[in-house]
Image 1 (cartoon, helix red, strand yellow):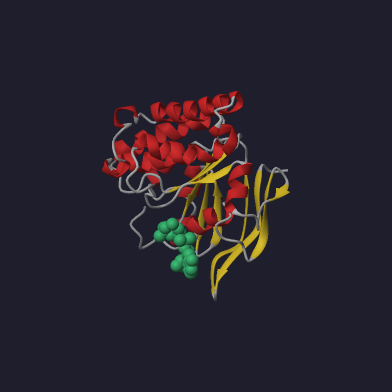
Image 2 (spheres, protein in one colour):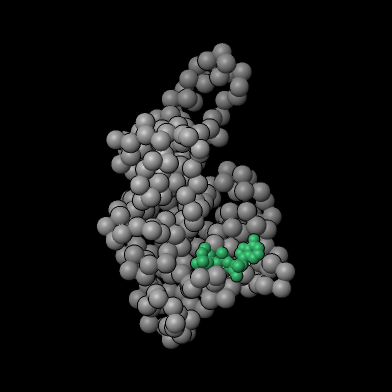
Length: 254
Ligand SMILES: Nc1ncnc2c1ncn2[C@@H]1O[C@H](COP(=O)(O)OP(=O)(O)OP(=O)(O)O)[C@@H](O)[C@H]1O
Ligand SMILES: [Mg+2]
C-alpha cells in the first residue's frame, strides 16, 4: 500500500481535462518533483490532492483511506498541507502575526479555556506559540519578526508562506513553485530549507519550473503534459526521456 496514492485521477473543466487518469504513488519521506509545461495540470494536481477541487474521476488515498471528496480543512487536519503559486499573506500582518494567525487551528483547547486561561490552555498556548517561533528561526525570519510581511522581499514572502503552512505540522507538504521569481542563490536557500524539513521526516511534493533546482532536490520526478503523466523516475532518467524532451520543445525550459 502506497503512502499517498492517486488512482486514475481526472479533473475536467467543461470539455478540458486538466488531469486525465493520472495515477501516482507517493512514498513516505520522498521529495517528489512535478514538472510540465505551462497549463499541463501541475497546480490542478495540488488542488485535487488538497481538496480544493474535487476530482471528476478516480480517487485519492492517504494511508489507504480515501481522502478525495473531503474538504480542504479535513485533508489538512489529516496532515496534507499545501502552499500557493502566488504569495498569499494576511493584509497588514507582521511576520510573527502571520505565523500566529496560521497557527490558530492548532489549539486543542476551546474559547472558554482561553478566556479563563486554564492550565490546559496555557500548555496548549506554549506549544503553539513555541512552534511558531521555532519555525521563524528555522526559516531565518527572526530579524524580520515585527516587520509587515508585505514589506519582505519576494523571496522571503515565499519562504514565509512555507513557514505558515508548516504551522499545521503536516506530514505531507505540497509546494506550488516555491522558488518562482527568485535568483539562483535565493532558490537554493529555499531548497536547503525544504531538504532540512524532509530530513526531519516531511514528505514533499514539489512543483518546480526550474530543472536545475529540481535536479538538486527531488528524489523522483513525475512529468505532466496536457493533463497526462508522461514520465516518472529519477531526475536524470526523466531529463533524457524522449517524450519529455518533445513535450518541452519550443518552451524555454531545457
Ligand atoms: N478553475 C479552472 N477553471 C477552468 N480551467 C482551469 C481551472 N484551473 C485550471 N484550468 C485549466 O486547466 C489546465 C491546467 O492548469 P494548471 O493551473 O493546473 O496548470 P499548471 O501546470 O499549474 O500551469 P503553470 O505552469 O502555468 O502554473 C489549464 O489549461 C488551465 O487553464
Ligand atoms: Mg501552476
